Length: 119
Image (cartoon, rainbow, N blue to C red; front, side):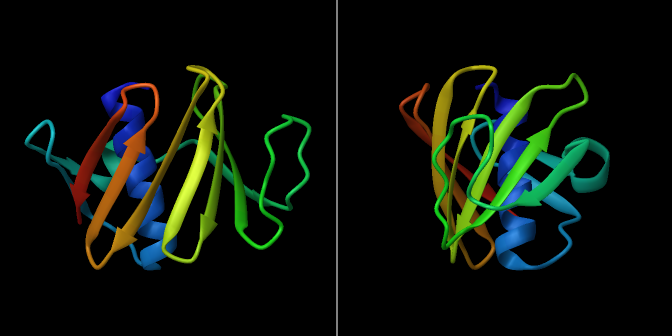
């Protein structure tokens, strides 16, 4: 998964879990501030139940989302309290993380690394 997509997922996680509008997200790995509405919005984010035709198992207790990018790429995203996880169908990789106060920590399984963001 590329750095821009990770930042967009961190923005989504911070917005949904933190229940707030984020104007600026700081990407610690790139030492870069990103403006929320200009750089970080996905084209479509749909909330849905645990069953989807993409064959990714969803938690019936979680808040489940289907994300479509501008180019039609599909991501699955689930929220469980302050935790989130999902699957990027384009890269074929899983991701997970948590939101604590104004910090998002995202683990990208394809990179085998954590990425931190502050809002």
